[in-house]
Length: 114
Image 1 (cartoon, one colour):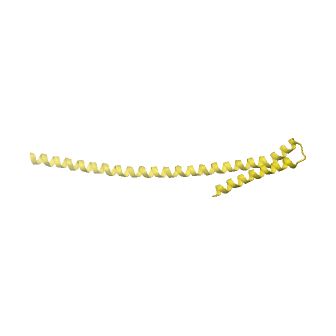
Image 2 (cartoon, helix red, strand yellow):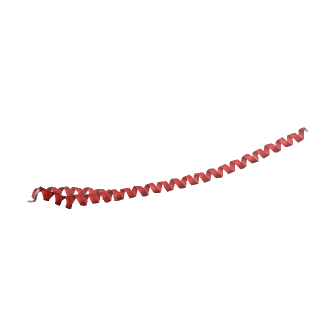
Image 3 (tube, rainbow, N blue to C red):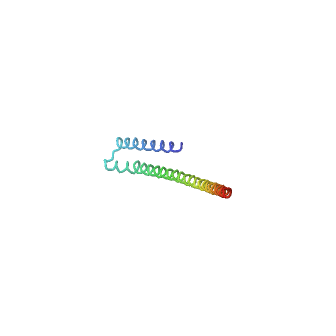
């Protein structure tokens, strides 16, 4: 919502600057060079500064958003790694237990056959 307000303000500001410049050109008794200088001072420079501020704010918001995504991805990867590590340990333990059980069965079979 705030981005919309900022964009609406910027569009309104630029439209007002253009209308003001057009009125000034039509109603001024000054030379073209003087008129262009005044238009630049009164309309172009402030509009340029406002657009630059808007772009910087947008860049900052995008950077904050990407930083948040990176942090969440890092946490998810860390959690997944921990879970996989736990599962790996459980699997190793189960394999060792099964192997020991199989070896014990072979030992019992060898004793019974002897």
